[in-house]
Image: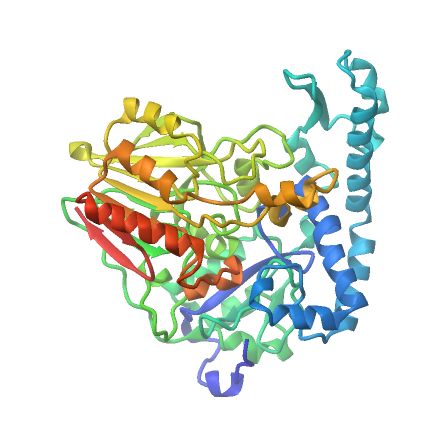
Length: 545
């Protein structure tokens, strides 16, 4: 990000007594231990394993040979790889973060070692006989927080009582903080999951936990102005920080949201997998990942285009391009209810979304299971099974959402569900019938298992096996099979990370030769041949029925 000329941006026009709004391009970047926060850094077990197996490994590699990282960052084929993006510099600062992590997170690292010991214990001694005698041998710091079990093939494993983990010393809220800064364009931010966040002249670090109500007070100022002096006091801004802090505000109000008052259903695409669906009575926001407001060649909806109140936020699955704290913290005060998939109940690869959202300050969280339906005033939401895309791991916290309105108007948000077993959706169709609109993800390359879940694995997976187990959505044949089942009048291909403002979280770049582009082009041609209105979404889209 280019350094902001703060003096030019604010001058001296804002006084403590002035009523001000936040600027439309003010970003909040949630952090855990100086790293960009995502769901696996909140749940204590996955946080510990990622600190050891991802963060420390990347930092140690950079400290040993920063030039390798500098070269790799410039190679498009290395996008999203484990490389720190500081051009080979700031090594002393990275080393200081590494040393601080080793000290401040020593108990979490011991926790990881205890997990290793437990896995080894089960491998050596759980041979199909009763597990009762093994409980006294569980590492002491894990005792009382795990249940040992066999699956029906007599493979031994364990699950956490995750709610107790949050009550333990291993949930370290003091590691949480956030950055505030202005986003000026689509392309200046580095890929966030492989580079720790260092201080910058245009970045304000705020050491508050993510549940802090001050965050809501700040972002309510998008529509409701407050006295600058009051918000400055709330964040305890020091004299040397004030010029930067003042640059985040303006006396100018953003445009007012115009509530939909029609008789139908208004659907707007905000980019990636983010869809806002409104009737005169109900607003539903799916997988919120939203762009900031600034000048750009690519037209898009921004935070200013959201309702004052969002009745329901739906999540399809727990990947960082669908559960994005950067968006969620900014809109938290608007959200009345959150609907999440039910989790697996303690499996480390499947953190409980309800528990996580509660810990970071969200309320009214509803869990939805497969084929369960919730009825609202003018619509219903049914959770449909979500297949694949999780590298064949036992992950249950994933759902497609079927939203049904008056006159039996239906739309499915399938996100990255990969139709690896078409008979599943044939059976679902017997229950729900035809659907008017299908939103379907086709990022069908996908990263290998280790890219996301590697730090959680007891042993590294062989490369050929790792590469065979992808975080991938539907290809042409799988998409075609779903279209043939649900017989939609409209198919919208989305969730592909196409928008330029998503690169910092998706690390995706496509060409016309990229498999997802080729496969989705085939789907669009198939739709054209069969009288289906098909489109690959990009930027923004408005649909009204």
